[in-house]
Length: 435
Image (cartoon, rainbow, N blue to C red; front, side, top):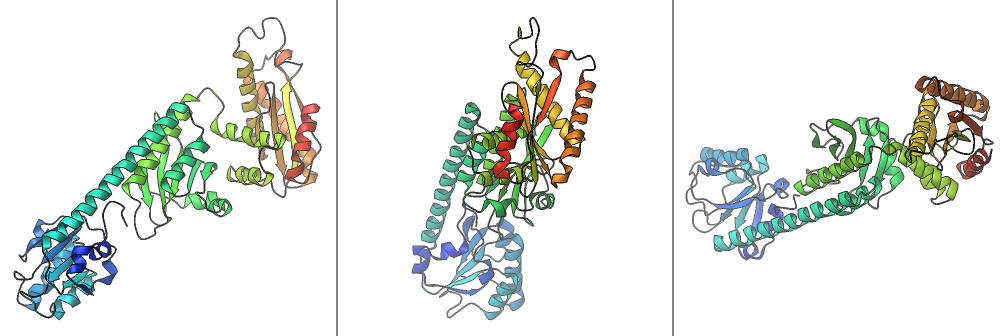
């Protein structure tokens, strides 16, 4: 049901309508159709004046007298998308509408209602139109709140997790932010089970194919919009609509597009900082080291990002520049941005080395001078081979980036003892940092 327009079922429950003692004689399947407007008509060709979504009220005095004409009349109403037909008994039809009319309405799924007691049509139209206007005002207020909420989030530079939290709160529906590789960057289950929401996400996401930049995919039940700016798309924002038989209301389309633009703007603002994926990696690694999040939550978020940590042999690795500081020598820190820039370069190199070595890991800076990685290996026997492949790949990446790199900016790689569970991963990371 659209939140803007009442349904035929709701209209039949209004006081003026109940005063007329309504009885549904056909078209039960269409009772949840939205009523966009109420139209009073006493002519057989009224369908030519309709635009769809109207509930037609009539006494029947102008309807055709023959069966073929009645079938055609019902057919034209159904073809134009009328919500239903209400016939007041007493003037043309005394005891009930003709059976041929009821049969035609049932066949087309058009609600056909008899009013067995006379009632002024104007009271019905006033009640329905008042309901529509009230609903539209409510929708307008909700839209204003959406714009205000996301304007505030943009000004505050809110993180993606906070944007999704507030969007899910406004929508009352689960939301997921993914990158173009179908890996989950952030999500909010809106009170539902997060594991069920994200189970098999990558495969599920590839089956969600909306027709447009912002569109609803009825097959999967997800409302989707592309996230990006300046011609560079980098992800999708998805909202799950739980009502299978209807499309999401316009309010939710506005909400998801505003949320997406807020995310895109935030990324532009942070374009010189770490990439979004690296920020999430850093959050998870920090959580393991500082015990700031439950281990199960870290595992779930990492899995959604494409890094499986459960039932893996985990090895903590820390990479840093040789010496106590990232770079040594006169004037090395003359530029206050040099240190952060070197650290970003090192973090990107570590991430590239992990990819080149075909390993799976969380990687990010763990302090002002070092980059950490938590390697997730299928088997403990792979540890030595994996570490050698990583070190070789890192050396190649660093040399390719700057073949004449001075000794002061060369790196040292340290590995902690491998562990068999995520709860022990902190020990391996701390050990690598100490080494």
